[in-house]
Length: 209
Ligand SMILES: Cc1cc2nc3c(=O)[nH]c(=O)nc-3n(C[C@H](O)[C@H](O)[C@H](O)COP(=O)(O)O)c2cc1C
Image (cartoon, rainbow, N blue to C red; front, side, top):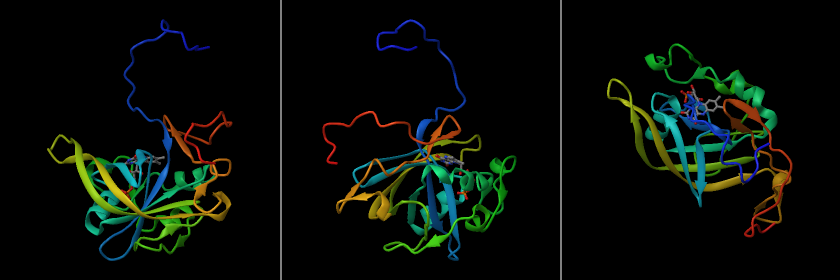
């Protein structure tokens, strides 16, 4: 068992990916003809009302977000992992980019493919996903390309969006404006496996509820 003083039993390794456990988010966007897409992703973090999204530049989510400049960052509960896996091999990009052809097929309607239901957003045009207890309506702020592919095309980018409206399901709200951590359980992507949260361990000095 690893203790707080163990400084000996470590090895240098080179894992293919460094997905050390972040929440899954489902990004809904619209294309130029108003068709809605869902992009599952997990490289997401929040600071204040800014969110940074790590996105592949060959995906439909990235191009929709750059073109239409708005999205909903839907945060699914843990129990939605099977629906998410049903759309995991799909892309809304047509034709499927060469770099995605080996693993992905085109799907125009990921809502039907994953068994998801649209619901109206309040401040942006892309629909939200019913059953996702936290829905962050956001507009494009900026982006920075992180890596270029072998052809010199943008490969991945850090996209900053600003949350302009937060919708939360009644069940996870406490008081007027707080999320109840006892009731909200994000879906965690942990080295390509899905997990729910474990037991409650404590809270930070700044916690208000
Ligand atoms: C659980 C999960 C997490 C993922 N995380 C990311 C991510 O953080 N960034 C990303 O660009 N793609 C991520 N992907 C892959 C995209 O979902 C995939 O490329 C998909 O085809 C994107 O759809 P789109 O092309 O319609 O936008 C993830 C997929 C799954 C299932």
